[in-house]
Length: 134
Image 1 (spheres, rainbow, N blue to C red):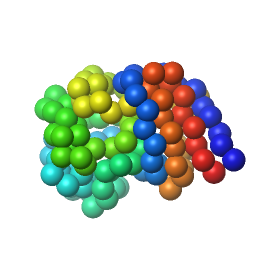
Image 2: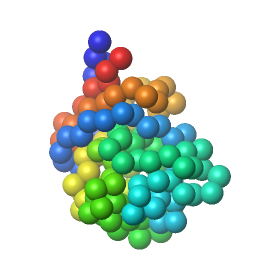
Image 3: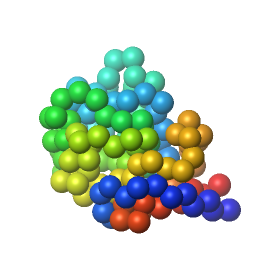
């Protein structure tokens, strides 16, 4: 069974993958290894997990504007997420997604906390639609 939800399209394109959900914001600068795609931020709930090929859902970014370029480096190294879902987009992540060609949406019509890990998701960054496979 598929469930489609509406959000706000941020970065064009579409991506599909396993949903990886973080309840905590993330800083891509010093938070994600651009060579491996592994979250290295000390104390982060997903520390040690890879974002490569996932639909990575997190509330919002934090930290330095260099985080945009870390997303770009992840894409160049083929270690980027297939798509990004944010609760509320902010400029660092938006710029990173756009320059990296990573589809992105925010403001889904359900509470962010209700996203469940290990479901697959298809993100359409142009229309803002996100389809979950149950």
